[in-house]
Image (tube, rainbow, N blue to C red; front, top):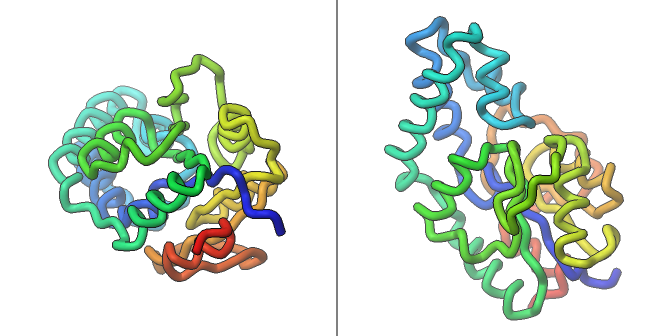
Length: 219
């Protein structure tokens, strides 16, 4: 197989170890307005941005104050997020080899931008699509969230590569479905596992970022 010319990473559970952080943030956000959701409830709502998830969990009048609390939690605790020690070297190797790196996350743009900046990851991604819009390069195009293929196809267009010349790396069924719908090979990132994750297992199961290297033709 010819190595891909572009790789599209998911953020949560792939680039960063963030499931516990995200679940705790939603409990903090929702706590004043009703029963706090458990981990499985939050995980089952993944796909669209946080504001849409809150709309599904809360009464309409509670959504905006809960969203503000969510962002406050994210900012206060972002420094504690983990990044696999092999991730930054992998991104550096991609850049050195001329492989374009994109990020496609269901997380909203507010928290995505803050997390990437707080962890000094922002510069490694040539283009970023968040759950509520395109962060970089800026675009007003409307994209559906995962599992729709829109974000994957948009990033392929930005990079000027056909879908078969890209690869999606993500930790959830949503990532694999978006990749499949776009006609892009997908691989499952399993280095930040969560017990409630559900995937169909019909693709590569990668236990560390270094396992991505052979798929990208990297030494």
